[in-house]
Image (cartoon, rainbow over all chains, first blue to last red; front, side, top):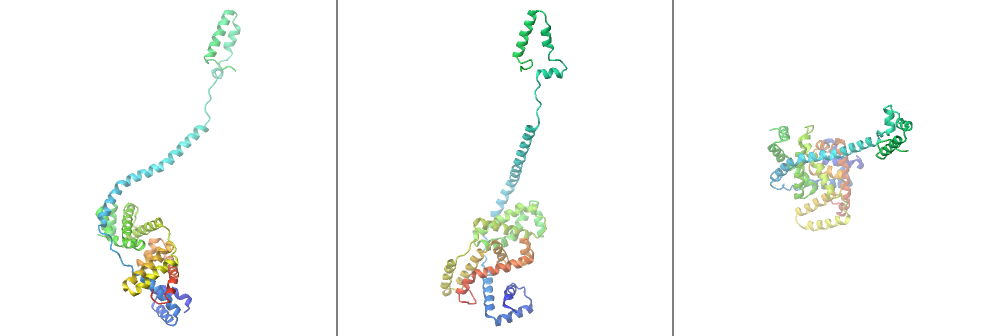
Length: 162
Length: 190
């Protein structure tokens, strides 16, 4: 047996995981090798110190202290669940708002029609009134028509000026 | 009543059933916490938190493993969190070891019990300085004496990984204690 592989055997032996034959071989090697014997003593000493942990008794009244905390948590748990859902809902809501805003901005808006366009849509010539003005023979009537047309322009009811 | 029945009743909201589970597992959970923290009050707080977490997580327990294994997994994870919050594991400088060793010299003249306590403290200080994964495995196996398969189930590791990690942890611990061993002049006992 070589000293190089002895460490694994020592650890298995201390763990009680070495079969009878291997244990005998290990014992024989340890008898003849002071370095490995020292290694084994060191591991045994460490294992002993670790096992030697004195078990402190738990503090009294463990359940009496725990049960009020459980009841408190039972009350708080649904609220925490609700808060968690709310926290998850906030980013979803913000995403929806951003998406809706993007849709609103990117969708082409219906433009307002000018009075001329409205007249054309109604299949009516926008020059009808103008033609009537020019065709009027009586000057006073033409002047009155011009005054009314001008007044209509000021109120913005007629088509926009160029 | 069988444990699985107690678990089912506790899942349905029975406080008595959960109390029975706490009574059964409290010593082990406390002992585990004590092994890591080495402080009775802190270990008690940790054990309380572990049972509180287990109580809140009960609906998620589907009996795929033993209740004890599931509970110890919660305990180990919680203890890791506590230790991380407390501060990273630190290397122990040689000066500090010599300081402990000086106490050991006076202990040789004092009672055997005091000497053993000093030895325990020294080894535990070095265990606490190991990287977390080695510290956990050496605590579960060498202090708590848990079987390999249970450690494997708690840590979600294969038994082979438990074996190799434990081997490395023990070697690392011995290597860190080596200066102390050599200072002792190669005696068989620390």
